[in-house]
Image (cartoon, rainbow, N blue to C red; front, side, top):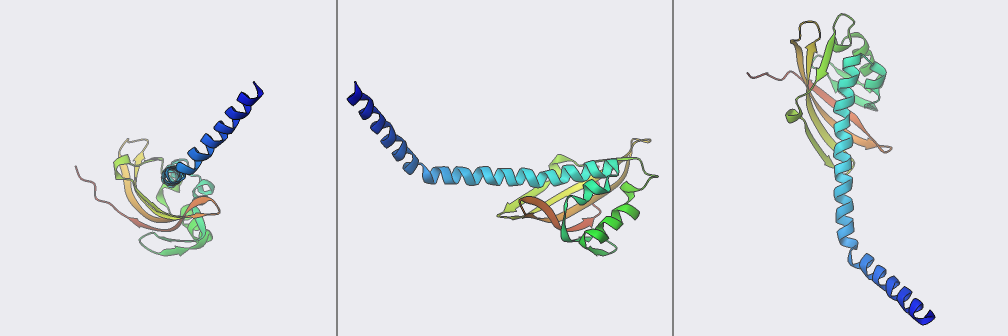
Length: 167
């Protein structure tokens, strides 16, 4: 009985060892795919947080998306660093102004995301809907370079554009 138990355990250990060795390249490729999918998901969350922040006029939430030395070309100026970017959202960005009651949305089919290691890109459009009139008040595009910094995906550069709506 004891001999059978020892033989069974040795067989189990050998089987597990061979399975682990034989599957290492497959596991590595699988892990890379899982990591890539996780990174694409994390980058996509930037768009979601952006729209939540702009819909709720939450500048603090918006600033969680930006790297400390990020740049933001808003069409009229290039802002550098979180302090300048924050000031723009607080004082000039239309969605954050008290007179505007807008909800921000983006058509999912217009989101484009790439990842390559710890760098990536993100493009989306903001369709700002006036809550009183239920009409589109503004449409802006954001073309961004993102980077994983200390384990978090952040915007390192952003360029705003005005997309053309087509009927």
